[in-house]
Amino acid sequence: MTTQTNALDTHLQRLQMILDKIEALHQLADDHFGHDPDAIHWGHVGDLGRVNQALDDLLAIFDGQTK
Image (cartoon, rainbow, N blue to C red):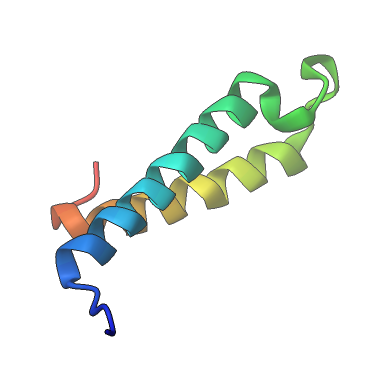
């Protein structure tokens, strides 16, 4: 017998994957993304700017607007 995955099952699996990645990002952020806070430079600031833009883009997909 073959098991056919339905959309809800796949949706819930992917949602958990996203939540796991959000948690990993949160843990990395709590640790300054592995950088010594006293050694932060403008390159790090630029990296976070790109991350911020990517998150805005993702929010726009689901939210229809950026904040």
